[in-house]
Image 1 (cartoon, one colour):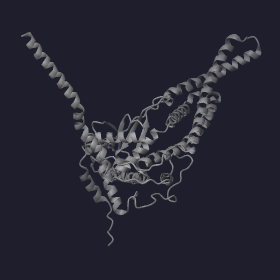
Image 2 (cartoon, one colour):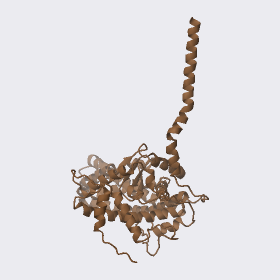
Image 3 (cartoon, one colour):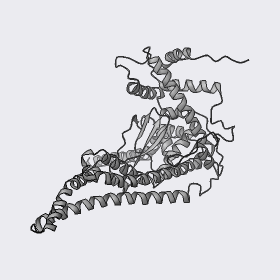
Length: 456
């Protein structure tokens, strides 16, 4: 009887172990079945990379390295001067305290030295206090304007971003934010001066106004450009530049420490050094933009980034036109629930009037004579310079004409959230007012537009 019970327990144990083994064996298969549809969809929405790309296409040029070195020298000189001022003031106060207690009072020369030191100690002490306090005012944290989106809400978009980051060779962004702008930006996470020396994660800001006017290949080119900035080690120098700007701005508004001309001297010294840092940073920014453009060329070809820039220009003009018309409609208590619907309508209207910029049939999109040349103090090169840089070694690539909105789930809900946030912040919509459908508002707006006669 006991042997039979042992046999039954042994058999049940073997069955249990077999069941666990079977479950472990088929667990990856179940995960593949669960996420296979998302991965397959994200892969099909990812435009192909070009073939036969030169290996040295994205290697930083000598101009890039020289400008980075100049900025590094300028920043080193600025903070050396800044620390030197702090050290000098501290040493002067220390010497004054020593002179008061240890130098004799009965000699006229030493008495005059003590009185002079005590007179200068007050303004120099105030200057030292503000110089040290300015370091604590260097808050480099970026506060996003829009809303944060997550992977479980838009799995196709995040799969797209992860694959693109693998191709670029960088870590995926820590956070992804969306707002109304016709732009995208790679934003490093930084909170203090210590982040200049320590590696930090980056965030990605996507403007739905940008998504609204790009196809998948152009969207990939813009993101590749932004992720190209992730590969540049010079982004840490930007933290130092921003910290120097905050220090100079803080000290410029300290009216109380202007005794005996000390304020004027310190402002002139730091202001002169800051101008050198600013010009060096602007020169490096132009090289960073050209290098990031080449990262986009490596993954999307020479045409896609340039056409994306042209589409962004058109999208920005149409966005401004749509907002101007909607502000006029708000005077009649008409508030749209989807601002991007009106941007698309404006782009369609512009397309009927004249061919949109970025047509691939045009060999050159930007003409140097019509495009404003970049000046020394501008941080972005002109569009004509960027096109010449992208097409210096022309790389062909297939174009996916499908809309970039395919990467987003619940497009209407997301557009409504951003539109509502924008309207309440910029148009000052009263709380009891509820926005109505965009088609109704667009009908009213379209009726007010001047009708262009059709030429037959």
